Length: 86
Length: 130
Length: 121
Image (cartoon, rainbow over all chains, first blue to last red):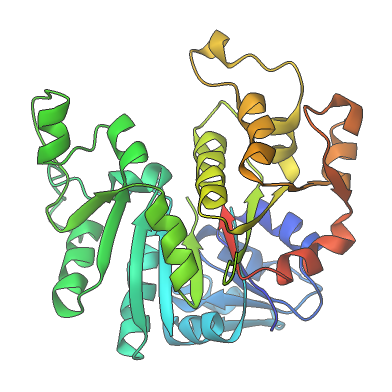
């Protein structure tokens, strides 16, 4: 089962990207969703409430998928372990 | 699944608690069990019953308490992290002869063993970082 | 111990400016007391926790380096440090307060994935 990486601050994404295995999932939440609006080589997920609150809905890049809390819960059940990056 | 959650951020200096309570609510609606929520580091400030929330905002503490009323799960705060940050329940307030107690009654003040127990018992452990 | 979980403590915060390092290490020691399979990975600014010659008393607080050296006494022997994080900070293993296994970033994804749970500082 792949690892779920939850990144909540933009500066932490770099370290997470270096470390995460190719098959792992990276979810941006809180302030890290700002990174969804800049080019990214890797496919990322971003939490919808945080994207919408920050006015980023139209600025999310093509290889970023926006997910809601139900999908967030699902990600937790389908990955192990879960690591947070701040 | 049995889930446990750690919250590391304090209200206002972090979005941690707010994200965590929304996650917890979604997990419970999906039929999962929340074994324990463990408030650590600055998250220990969460159960401050002395906090007065501005009228146009929703208190994250109230949201945790409302969720606990519908689905019974453990809201715990680390005693070490709590005491040093001035978060005391009635028992600790009396023990240390302090002027007041402020930890919300719905929160249990516990040792770090409860964090490790939560990890041992749960299928998944998620941290909401500060 | 049967049924012990593989728990990784991922320590990325520097010591002293906040209590994150201290509180995370205290949790790791408790995990050791509970006889879990504990690993610790010091990464990014967390590698500063390993530096020798720390003196917490100057700041009226506990010396983080001393707490780190207590980890093996609680049977926590799987101590890892990120190679790249050391190099960025011009540190070598000679500068560290106890022997640790150096792991490159390329190996850390798998190290993490082998765990049942990760505790963040």
